[in-house]
Every structure is written in structure tokens, then in C-alpha cells.
Amino acid sequence: MRIVLVGPPGAGKGTQAQFLAKELAIPHISTGDLFRANISQGTALGKEAQSYMKQGLLVPDSVTIAMAKDRLQKPDTGNGFLLDGFPRNLHQAEALDEFLREQNIGLDAVLDLEVPEDEVVKRIAGRRICRNDSSHVFHVVYGPPKAEGVCDVCGGELYQREDDNEQIVRRRLEEYHNQTEPIIGYYKNQGLVKTISALGKVDEVTERALDALKSRT
Ligand code: AP5
Ligand code: ZN
Image (cartoon, rainbow, N blue to C red; front, side, top):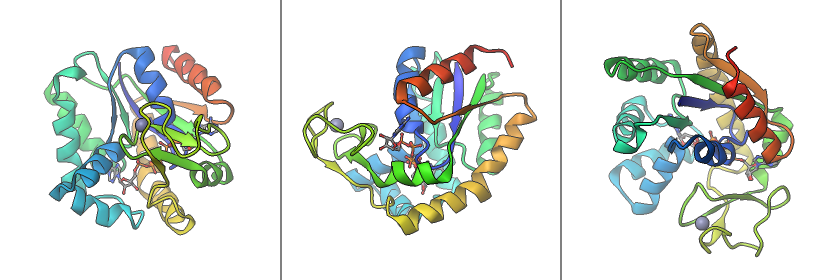
């Protein structure tokens, strides 16, 4: 399956993507994780992305689209993919459509995670991620690691993301409303959108997501 995951910052996209990708046997491709990997490796791409990310702004399309296309061309996408955090505006959505059209393929679904803003703020405030791999995500209250400050998956050190402070989270939410929400309308016109509530336990949300992906409407 070829799926796009959309939802505000802190909705649980990364958390759900890990389970859904495993269940559907497709790679989880997160542009946020790709940028963070570049930042920790000190690449030129990472340096450019970091200057936008730390302000809560979108990284320019030219950089982001090229990186996403590059990743989508890796051989592990033969069975499909789960895109998390891309596309994030109409221009990126059109670029993705064009890229898929060139290969005579299309998206199967756009999964829209709905969550109220006060919950988003709580989720982001308590989030801790792993220095070794930013897809290893915990929450100090909702999903704490077994040992404080240590990743359950790989033993890495847990830290709080630079863009997870209140002022920057507000900016990220604004960017989401202004730039990303319009892609939901764009994909609704293509009949692809499945909206689910992202409230409740992580496994309940995963169940809801899998049911929605199986349904035809
Ligand atoms: P990105 O990394 O994509 O961040 P985001 O969209 O803001 O999303 P988050 O990672 O904050 O949240 P999430 O929905 O994955 O939630 P999570 O599962 O961690 O992007 C970061 C930046 O990179 C952007 O601001 C931008 O600058 C740049 N960027 C990325 N893509 C771009 C693009 N395409 N174009 C331009 N720029 C781009 O969950 C949050 C917390 O809640 C965790 O602690 C988790 O444990 C907890 N949690 C999850 N589910 C539940 C639950 N059901 N109950 C209780 N707690 C839960
Ligand atoms: Zn880890």
C-alpha cells in the first residue's frame, strides 16, 4: 500500500507509523526523521534544515522534495510506503503526484489523524526521543521508558527535541493550519482521505487506523 499520514505536530504520526509499517510490511518514511539524521551527521542538508526546524518553519520545498524523491526511489518501496510528514503543503502534494504518475502508480489512502490542540501540547511537552534514532519515541507520562532517560529499543540516551518548546510548538501548529491542512482538501477531491480520531491508547488508535485503511470509503 502507498499511504500518506497527516496530522498536527504531536498527533502521534511517528508512533502510529512504526506499528502500521510493521503490520503492512512497508517502510516508514519520515521527512522529519531524515532531516534529524542529517543534522546529527552534520551534513550540509542537515545544517540548512536545522535553521528552519528550530524556528518551527517548514524547510524549503526544493530541498524537501528532492530528499523525499531520493528516498522514495530506494528499492525497499516496491511493496509501497508510509509517508509521515510529507507532503506538507500543496506544492509538495503536487510534486508527489507528479512523481508517482511518472511511474504509473498512485496513492491508496491518506490517513488523517485528528486530535485536539490541548492534547497535542501535552503530548509534545512530555515527548522524549532517542539520540541514536529519532523514530524511537517515548512520553514521560503516557509511554515512559523502562529506565528513565534510556531508550528501551537500543539503550541510547533520550532527549527533548529542540523544537519541542511551547513557543516553537505554537509556530509549528500555525504552519500546520496554514500550509498543511489545505492538502486534506486536495486529497479529499481525489477521494483518498480517511479521518480517524487519534485519542485513546496507542494500540486503540492503531486498530482504528487499520480498520479505516481496510474500508473502501
Ligand atoms: P516532524 O518530525 O515531522 O514533526 P511534526 O509533524 O511536528 O510531528 P511530530 O514529530 O512533532 O509528532 P508526531 O505526530 O510524529 O507525534 P509522535 O508520534 O512523536 O517535523 C519536524 C520539522 O521538520 C518541521 O517542523 C519542519 O521544520 C521539518 N519538516 C519535516 N517534514 C517537512 C516537509 N515535508 N516540508 C518541510 N519541512 C518539513 O507523538 C508525540 C508524543 O505523544 C510522543 O511522546 C508519544 O509517545 C506520545 N503519544 C503518541 N500517541 C499517543 C497516544 N495515543 N496517547 C498518549 N500519548 C501518545
Ligand atoms: Zn533508541
